[in-house]
Image (cartoon, rainbow, N blue to C red):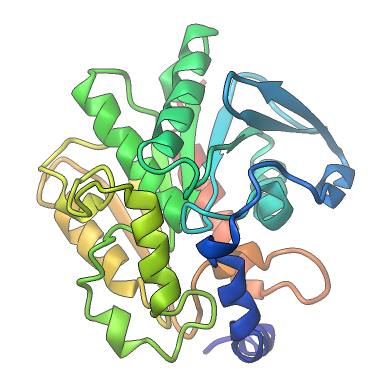
Length: 304
C-alpha cells in the first residue's frame, strides 16, 4: 500500500504535469550551467567544485565521511536538463547514509551537446579517480533515469576497454530504451506524472541522438550484448512509463548467469520518486529505498 505522502505527490505532480513538460522543452534551449545554488547550504557537508576542460563536478563530502570510498552519481533529466539543483536531496541523503563522498558530474547536455558527450564526461571522472589512486573496488556508480542509462553505457565501455569495474552499480527508474518499444510506454501513459509520452520525449530523443541509431547499446542498454557486470540493483515504480525498461534490462543482464541483479519494484509509485526524500513531505518509501541503495553499496565494498 502506497503511503499518504506518496499519494499526495502522485496527485500533486499530476496537477503540475504541464509545468514538468516545459522543463524538458529542448526548443527553449536548456542552460548548461547551474544557476540556483540553494543546495550548497546543505548542513553537515563540505561542498566544493572540481573543474575539467568542458564540465564541472560537484564534490559532496559529509562531515561523517569515511575516507577512501566514493559514489559517482549520474543525474537524470532526459539528457537535456537538471543538475544538483534538482538532485541534491537524494545525493546528500545517500552521502549521509553511507558516510561516503559523492562526486556529481554536471555533464554536458543536449541539444547543444548530443551523444556521446555526457558519456565522455562521466567516463573522464571515473578514469580520473583511478589515476588518482582510488581503486575501482572502492567506487560505486548510481544513476537515475537518463543517469541510469549513462551508468549502463559506462559499464559497457569499461568492459570493452578492460578497465576495472566499480564494486557495484545502482539504477533508479533507468531509461534504457530510447526506441520506446516497451509496452508500459503506452499502458502507463496516464499513470506516471513525471515522465509522460508525447512530442516532448520525441524531441528529446532526437536532440540527444544527434543522428545516431537509438538501438546503439550505449544509448539503449537493453540492446547490449551479454556482458559480465558488477552487482546491480534496480529500483522502479509500478506507475512508470519506463517500467518495462527496468524489467527487460534486469532479464537481459541475468542472461549471463554469473551476473548479480537485484530488482526492487515499488507499488503505486512513480518515476524517480527516490528524489522526494527530504523535508516534512518526504515520501517514506523514498527514504526506505535510499537506505536499501546504501545497504547494497556497502555489501559489495571490500571488507576490512
